[in-house]
Length: 302
Picture 1: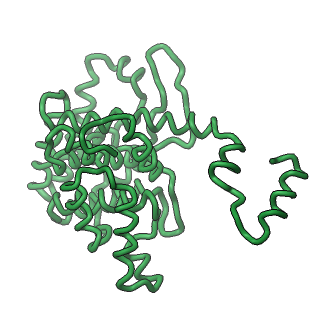
Picture 2 (picture 1 turned 60 degrees about the horizontal axis):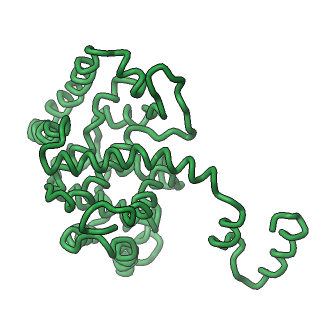
Picture 3 (picture 1 turned 135 degrees about the vertical axis):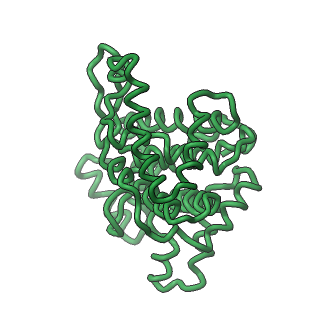
């Protein structure tokens, strides 16, 4: 993605990263995005430095765009030993050629540490993972549901990652943007998502509901790690507007993830067999390729 600002050239990579919401493995329940969200909060809660957590989580997300759940720990268990880190670095370099060099180097340094170690997480982490996003809503209109629905943990993780990438476009502190992304839907831990239509029906009581639910999450953090609670509150404070560099980078990430999530449903529905068999080579070259092609032709699939 370009380091000079947002252009359409950034979209293919952002789309690829967004698919971390849909990549699963036998490693553990939940998508990669959902699990990175939990790992990030576990690391923050136990007192890891936010800058270090940002680098590990965002670096892991970039690598996972190509390697999925083949992270440092898994590759080491599979016998790669000292070759594990170079594999991660190759995946990182493959997707970050257009990233701002200084930011890329900062994130790449964290690959030697792998993903953060699991730790205890606040209760809101599980709630946000169980809370689906509303889908497409508008006042007076029935809801458009696109399944499977993303959850709020996945959305927050992707906004945090996108926000770090967008921070260079606005001269923002990537750590503050990362924290704002990770926390910006605190209120949905206790507030089911009724979307834009529900917000309009709440009217002038919307802010009260959001502030009450958000305060419960901040109180939970404060009971375990008062410094972290203050840091998160400070990161959230500017995003009600767009006057600071951090707020602008955050809103780039938030609106792009919101729209790209819906777009991926539409793109998937538009895929044709010509694309799958031709451009993507679903039946790829090999010793029985000719026979496979005959089978598809006989079946009328090619």
